[in-house]
Length: 248
Length: 267
Image 1 (spheres, each protein chain N blue to C red):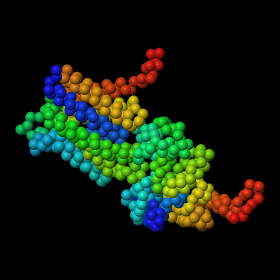
Image 2: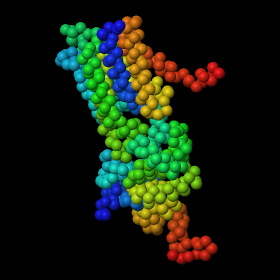
Image 3: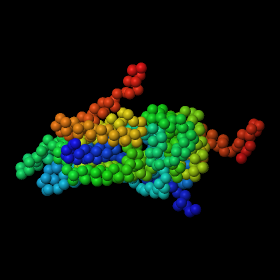
Image 4: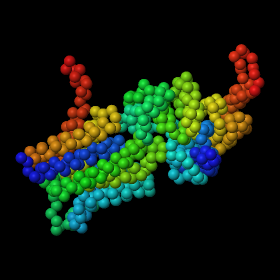
C-alpha cells in the first residue's frame, strides 16, 4: 500500500480568519488509517475549529485541506437540535446514511445506549445523548472518525469504557481518528500522535515528545509534568502480579 | 351529482395537498413560514406578469418567486439586516409593486379577491395538469434531496462533515417552495398558501413521534382540509382558500386535544 492510500486527511498550513482575526493558523497535520491523532490545548486555542477545517465544514480557509475519504463519522462538541422535529434515537442513527438495523443495534450496544433506541432524542440526558452521538458516528463504519470532546457529560466509569471503545474501534475498523480531549491522561496513553494547539501548532509529535517539550510545559504547567511521570511510569517498567517490578 | 367545476377543484386540491404535506413539514422544521409568505406575496407580481405578457400563470409565478428567493439569498449575504426584516421588505415591496402594476393594466378585468383568496371556479383542466405534473416533479425531487435536506435540518455541520452537500439541498428546496406556490396559487390564493403549508404540518407535529409519521399525517390533514373546505365553499359560497384553511385549523385544534387524558376523564 502506498503512502497516499494511508492518508485520510491532510491539512497543509491551514487556518481560518474571522473578522480579520485568526481563529487558528498554520496547522499542518495528517490523519492516517489506524492512527489516533489527538488535539490538545487550552480553551479557545482552535481545537474544534481545526477539526471543522479537517472535515471541510469551513469554505473560506487559508492553506489547503485534502480529504481522501467520504466515509466520515463526526461527533461535534456542541450540537443544537431544534425540537420542532419529532426525532427518535433510531431516526437519528439513520441521519446521514441508511444503516442496517443490526449495525444500529450493535453500535448502540457498544456505547451502552441500546435501551434508548426508541426514546425521543429531546428527552435524553447529556451523557445519554453523548453515547448516542458516538454510536451514530461509529455505526456507519467510517474510515475517518472525528471526535470532539466525545465523552463530555458521561459518568466516570462510562468515560473510561468509551475511551477503551474508541481505541478498540481504531484497531478493529482500522480507521483514522482525530480526537479532541481535555483528559491529558487519556491523551498521553492512547494516542499515536499529539498536536498541541494554541492558535497555532505549539508542538507536535509522539505523546512523549510533546510531554517533554517546553512549549507544552508552559501551556499546561504543573499538570504536564505529572502526566509525563504517569506516561514514563507506564512505559519504562511493568508491575507484575506478585508485586515485583520488571524493567522494560 | 356534482358540477364539473367542483370535480376539477377537488382533483386540483388533492394534488396540492399531496405536495404541501411533506413540503410543509420542512417549512415548520426549518422555520420558513415567513419565507413562504414572502414568496407567496411576490406571486402577485408573477400573476401580473402573466397577464401582461400572456404567459401561463403557474410558470410566471414560479419564475418571479424563484427570482425573489435568489434576491433574498444575495441580500442576506451582502447586508447586515436581520432575516425577518429582509423578508418583510421583499414581501411587502413585491406585493406593492404587483398592485401598482395591476393599476396600469386597465385593459384587463382582475378578480383581485380570487387572486388573494383562491377561486375554485377558476380551475380548469389545464391547471389540473400543471398541478399533477408539477406536483409529481416536486415530490420526486424532494425524495431525491430528502437525506441531505433532512440531515442538515437536524444539524448542518453533521450533514456537511459527513459529505451530504446541504447547501445544494437547501438551494433546491428553495426552488421547490417557489414551485409549490406557483401550482397552488389559483386554488388557495396568495395570502393563504403558507397556511396550507404550515397548518396541516403543525397539526401532524402534535400527534407524531417520528419524522415519517409527521409527513404522513401532514398529507392526510391536507387532504381532509381540501375536501372539507371545498364542500363548505360549495355549500356556503365562500372563497375556496379561506374555507380550506379554516378546515385545517379545525383539524389542528382537534389535534391539540390530548386523547389519552380525555379517555382517563371518561373512566
